[in-house]
Length: 260
Image 1 (cartoon, rainbow, N blue to C red):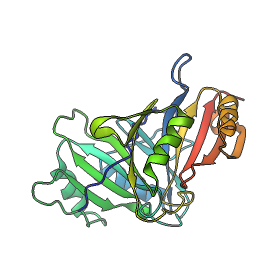
Image 2: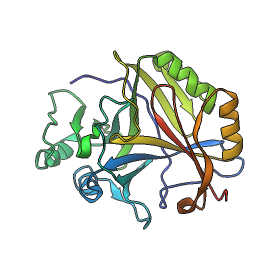
Image 3: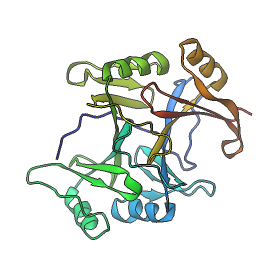
Image 4: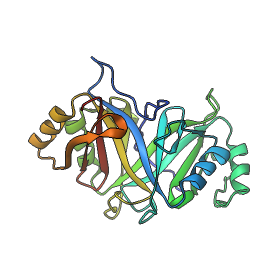
């Protein structure tokens, strides 16, 4: 099993699936990860019963939560698996890998084989969502979000793009390929061939909460970024949303609660 270098995104979870940045806080905060599923209820059952995630309590959204992440699951058959797109896989951490491996072996997703001495496994989960599970004996929570892995033929350029447009700070030393963002830690890996866009795939997009969506989108446009869906009212969050795609195909949703 290959050992992946990762793009890590630590996402602030909330009971309502979204969290508005406090006044005076960072202008950008990671909000959620959006999955597509032909059968969201079955996907949620897997995430909950096999992986140990909690079910979201919000009536308007289906999904699961872990320590550090909110994952929303929409009713839509994906056009392809996460592998092969710019978002290759999602990663979780557990204190003890063996019980999770045992539960996976009893599920429909049995391609998780833990090699002797390894502290991780990889599975192809519901709807083709690739999931990496890492063992971390120092954890105090049952399940914790670890990272999201992005592929690009231009990892350095991708790093610079996020730093410029989202205010990230490049890493150093062993994390030189990384980027620290408000609410997110990113590390970019090189793909041998261009990855497919994420829109419509098993992992559809990443979502970020911004403090002033109109000003933020204007700044992006000044930097040459195309806003594919301009800010507009969104009743489900009693605010506004917008959407764009990074130059490598990663769909990004911007949202601001209470912006109507």
